Image (tube, rainbow, N blue to C red; front, side, top):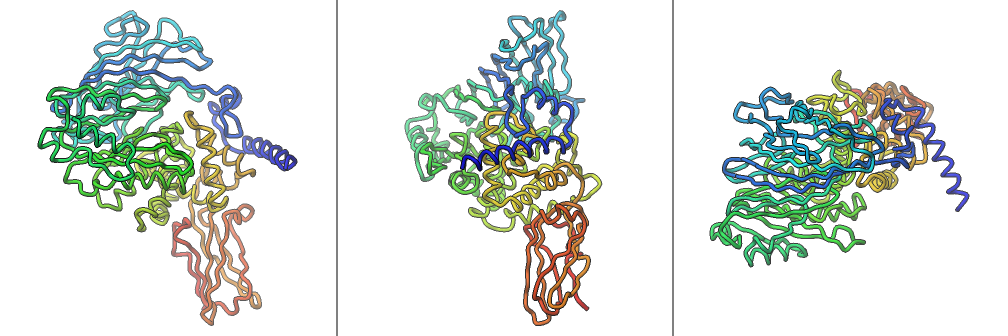
Length: 626
C-alpha cells in the first residue's frame, strides 16, 4: 500500500509539471504560482493569503419611499505581504446614476443619484470635502488614497454614512415587488477584494456580471416602520423582542420541525398580531465568514418554514423559509421542496452538508442567489423547482467556495446548473430539468462566431456569449468530463476541490490543476479544447463499410471537440447492434475514427447520437445502405 501511494505521489507531481507547461497561463496568474500563493497541484500555495473586513452596519429603510440611510464601521485587515497605498470601495448603486455605464438600458424612472456619501472617515481623517486627501469616483468604484500605507498584518478603520434610493420596480436582481415588498442587495459601501492575482479588483459593476467578495463578518441592524417584517442573511438575534408570542412560538418550532410550519399568515397580518408592539422595529442580524449580506422587507407576505438534517452523518439542521404573497400558490410548498433538495444534495448529489444554517426563499422576481437568501419569481411548479435548486446550490459555489464570478462565471454557474440535475429530476421530473435541455441550448450557439473559450474572463463576454459560457457550454463540458472519468471519480474530485478552497478564492486554473492532480493523469487532451480552445461538438458518419461479417463505421469529428458517441446499427434482419465510444477515443484520432462492430451481418442503417451527449448537427448522424 505504501508503495502504491508513493508511486501515485510521484505520478501526481509529474502530471502537475506537465500540466503547467502545456496550458496557456497569463503572466499575472503565472506570477501567483511563482510566488507560491497557489500551487500547480490545484491547492492553495504555502504563501496563500486573503484579506477581510468586519462590518458593523446600522440601516434605516423606508419602504414607502424606497429610501435607505445607513452608517457603517469597518475594520479592514491586510493579510497580504503588500503595503497598500489606497483602497477601493464599491458603491454598487451608482449604477443607477445618469451617465454611468450599464449593460442594459434603464428608463428614466429608474435613475437616481446613486450612493450619496455624507461622511467617509478613515483612521480618523475625514475625506468628504477634504481637498488635501485624494479620492476619485469612477463608475461604481471609489478610489481612496491613504495618507499612510496599510502595512502587512495591519488594519485600518473606516466609517461611512450614506443614503440611496432603491428604484421602484425590479432591476439588477433586486427591487420593489409591491407597495411595501422589497428585496435589497448591494446596498452598503463595501471594500473590494485585494488578491494575489490582480491586486485590487477594480472592475466596474455594469449589471450583467456578478460578484467577487471577501469572506467578512457582519453585525447588522435594520430599522423599518411599524408592522414590517425583515428577513436577512445571518442569525436573527432578537426575534423574542419583535415577534408576538404565538408567532414567536411558531418560528421557534420551525427551527427544529420536520414538517412545514406556518409562521405568519394572512390572518395574522389582518389581525395585526404579528409583532409585540405597534411601532417601528429594529431587526438585528449577525453572521461570520460570509461574502455578502442581503435582506427583504414586507408588511403582508406569508411566511412558512421547515428544517432538515441535510446529511445523515451530521446532526446539524438547516432551516428553509418561504416568504411570498398569498397569491403565489406555487410558493406555498417551496420550503418543503428546498428541505428535500438540501438532503438530496448532501446524501446523493454532492456528498457534503449544506454550508449554511438557513435559506430564505423570497418571492420577488428573476432568479438570483445571495448568501442564505434567494430572490425568485413565481412561475409554474416545474420552473420554480429548477430555479430554487439552482439558486440554493449556489451556497456551495460561490458562497462557500469563493470563485471570482466576474472572471470565471462558468465555475459557479456551470456547477450549479449541472450538479443539481439529479436532484431536480428526483424531485420535479420532466425534460426541463435534464441534461438534454441544456445540450439543446448549447447547440443553439456552439460554433458561432461570437462563441469564445471558457477561459476568456467573463467580463469580456457579452449578451448570449455570456449566458452560453456561464450556463450551457460549461455544463456540457462538465458532462463530458464526468462521462470520461466516471460519475464517482468526477464527483469526488469536485468534492475535494470544494474542501480545498472552502472559504478561499480559487481561479479557473486552480480548478483545472485540481482535475489533473486528483484524476492522476494529464487531461490536457480533453480540457484544452473544451476550456481553452475553439470548436464545437459535432460528430458525423463519414462512411460505412462491410468487412466480411463485421461493420466498420468511419466517424468524422466535424467540430473538433472530444465527445462521447453512441453508435446504433440495424442489419437486414432488423437486429439492433450498439456501441459507445468514450471521449478519449479522440485523444489520438483528432478528426477521423474507424469503429469496428463485429458479427453484424449485412447492414441496413446506421445512426449515432444520444440526447445526453452533445451534438450540434443531427443531420449528419444517419447513414442508410442503398
